[in-house]
Image 1 (cartoon, helix red, strand yellow):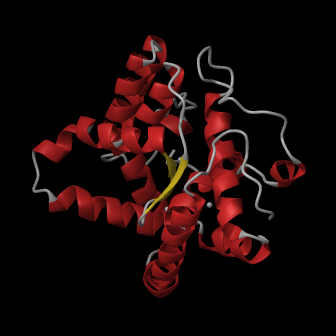
Image 2: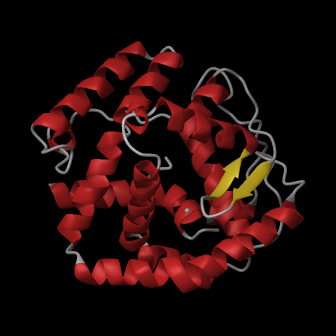
Length: 259
């Protein structure tokens, strides 16, 4: 899942929408005091609103339905993926992503079934934050957004741009995209409920854990790109080595289940 995969789900959906207090070289955190305040607010919102709702959601809906909902929202973001692939000069990937959207929308019942993955069709999810990084734009300071959670200055700009690119938002009342986004986040919070709770319990400083997980995930997404791909990182600390990419691990689990 980029805001896909558990690392991003953790940072976004714990509302804090996945240790020590060192700041990684990847992104300075000069606004840590304000970020921690927002993080605390998000944690309270998660404890009293989001987590209970996610438990109820998970109790009522079978796993296959949750997966279908997740597939639907992933598919609905495909046009944004195509647009960003093209902006990055990845025309072949954009073409493949467009066909992925066509396959899942038609044969996958509006994307509820990920037919493209079943057919081993490649997936190239992108967002405008990654596009800006590819163009050489630094992410700037780390930033915690209310409700949405972990981000950076660059990625926050990217979120707004991607929202504007989503064409369906121009043809429905303003509250429909908001409600859809809330359902998407709630569904992902339910899917990754146990992983998030376990990480919260095991982390010495959950704020730093979420920050490191988010930044490492973004580094991982940019690895090997000609511009901005290294995210100006230095040697990884032991703290960073102890973290793991929830995204890769969970994607492997989903592939095993599909097989």
